[in-house]
Length: 83
Image (cartoon, rainbow, N blue to C red; front, side, top):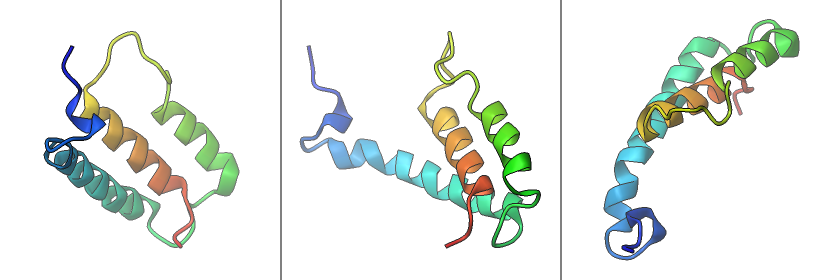
């Protein structure tokens, strides 16, 4: 069985680069949605919104690595305090 490219080797960085771009875009989008240093509404608003964005945690059918990563990182960045 071949080793997946993200497991390392010379193909690892090339396989990882598109995912890093996805994360950076999602961080930008989440911060824009947050629209300030703290998410509006506090934990009572952020908690259900984050649960909705990450449900189900393990779906029956995947959405692909870029869509899943973007949805998760966007939700987390939107609900996080801006360091």
